[in-house]
Image (cartoon, rainbow, N blue to C red; front, side, top):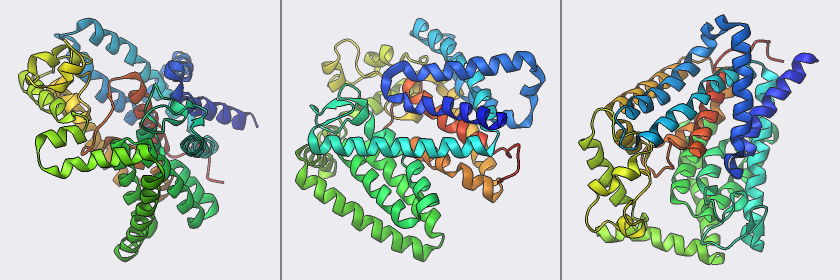
Length: 410
């Protein structure tokens, strides 16, 4: 009984990170609690850090933190870079906490179910806001559904898209394929109405992986893909007709096929200019980059004269690269790229060696990570508290699920 209560408390702490994501820096509270708990445990038994179950989590921290440390040495914004280096140390004890907290099957299953229902609740709230113009995040006053995050924090689309495997697979596990398909359709509507094209791409990645996972054969996959395509088209058509905001986003996106750079820039919210500048910045600082969080400081030195971001933010330009590989390359250089790509290769190798039941248990978080890191997309800044919190949460929970549980399966 005592073990079950401890497992539930650990799962609640981890779940709280997800629950508090829409509320600014409140998500840092359970991260800090978990980190302090892990530090206290390490002081009592320092040798536990050498256990094999912690190895991959420690490497995950190293692959993220060492590049930013190296970049801060000669950063163009040393105050910002060293502050980021210092504050990101919290992920080291938090990594140990995640692995320890999810050492039991009870904690793993509890976290999965709670997280799935939470994301489904966000989906319902977004749909309510799209119909009635108001939801838990407030009134809808922008050009897209903002849901629980609110109009001043338009992150709903990418977050729902990345986390959508959780409610879909919970529904599949508990209620079967029909209910899972309904949950997928509701999530698709919410992601579409959220209006973030990066979220649309992430959700498409999630859908493809889920369909292959469920179908398991090429013939069934092709049939499932056809059905999902028809359902998504119907949902998109209904949203296009009933939501003027969504129709405007779609029309703007279709400009990308016009063939001109100006049309492509308009369709992608002028991100092509950011990517060009990020490439130039990376070539100018190839070893360890301009410094983590220093992208905005060096942007003006590499931007084109007609860059729209210079007009929108005079004297500064864009804040980050809007694509994670370019962010790593420009802010942390070749050192950062080498660390990130080497770790991802290690993760893929580790995943391929997992037993079937462990791969199955870790699947919701692995699919979410794949959608989050899909390179042919736009991204939030990975070296920022919001997106890095979600990244580490997903990654560390996945890593914890790849270690055998401490008690036998019930």
